[in-house]
Amino acid sequence: MRVAIIGAEARKFTDLGEARAYDLILSLLGPHDILVSGHCHLGGIDIWAEEAAAQMRLKTLIFPPKSLSWEAGYKPRNLAIAHNCDILYNLVVDVLPPGFKGMRHKLCYHCHTDAHIKSGGCWTALQVQRMGKPAHWRTIDNGV
Image (cartoon, rainbow, N blue to C red; front, top):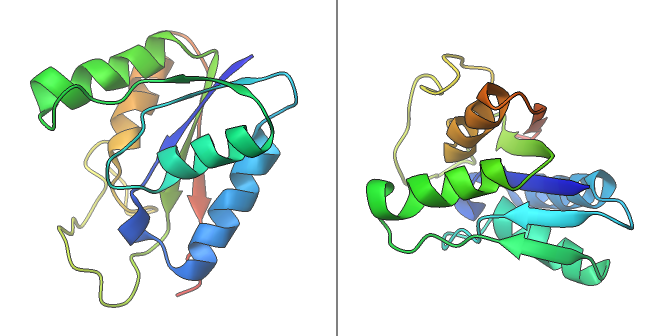
């Protein structure tokens, strides 16, 4: 099965949240799966999923953005992930770490919820659902 694992960037995780995310990634991948992901330049779920796949000696389909812009980079990358997976897991965090420096949003504007912190992975997960494929959100408890 081609399993997409995507989600929040590294700075949105506490150390505890990162450990929990890595354990979850390992549990989502089976011995015959192919990891599909997006090689986010900001680290986080995409990179940890690649590391887990390497640890498990799995095949990968990695789609890095061709540029750091929406139209020429992230959007086509995210659509490639959506088209090339059989199932998608979007790993998001419940709260930001203390001292987080970056953009904050009252709601995840993709999901229209305050149950998790906004992630670009949510946009991709919604595209997967529109394609009639399963997409699942997993919220990581950052322990804050």
